[in-house]
Picture 1 (tube, rainbow, N blue to C red):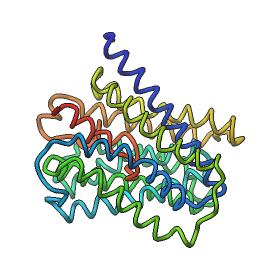
Picture 2 (cartoon, rainbow, N blue to C red):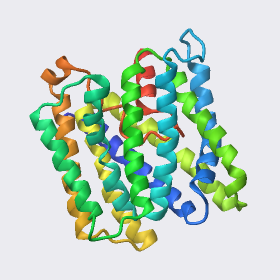
Picture 3 (cartoon, helix red, strand yellow):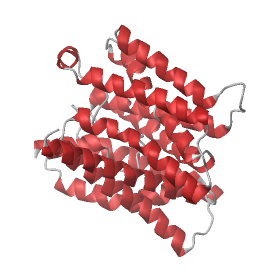
Length: 319
């Protein structure tokens, strides 16, 4: 591995470690506060970053979306994803939540067929089937009672996949700031409207943790952008699965959580399937047939709280 690629891989590992720390704060606050309140303050503290992006955006145009229906779809799915993901992190063990969320690339691959007209050949199709088998291993339907948190994690994976499809469909035509601003504004308005029903006063330490969620997300995003400038997607993207290691360690240290054999086995199956799909999409013959929907755009759940990595990465390449 070349020095630049090695540096990119290490940057990605650090970024996903920071993302995992971000999720620890979400889980810690989720023991006391509604996901609505956590998301609201995270968006409020995340707006300065978006303001800086807006001020630096030199592209001509307005904030009117060129594809309003796809923008509505992406915005709605991002809001739902945020609520589902934050709730899942609050009530489920960290490692179990990650294992289910790692199914997102599998869902993206399947949805790309009817929504984007892409072709899923036999090997990738089998990888999806195997991956969803891993999800069933984690969930153990019939053996363990399924809770609302499990459904929320599945909803987050589906919502993030739909958002990714919308990005793939119109991302090249829309201004980046439109794709960034609309989900954040929707989160602010929707969560703000719900706040009177769920609000609990927050002491200074909890407000600081809310700020930490936004700050850690911003730092990790910057590191991922730098990672992609040093290494190819085939090196950076699989590093997202290192979050399961962070989740296992954090879960044991802070929440007395130990992943069971089913979670470990299911996560291994899902991760192997996801890496295989990423590898298949990264092959030159695959890129020549279609533009893959995985990779740089879809390393984290699209909650609409912070700018998407792919949008900022694209800006950096254009600038």
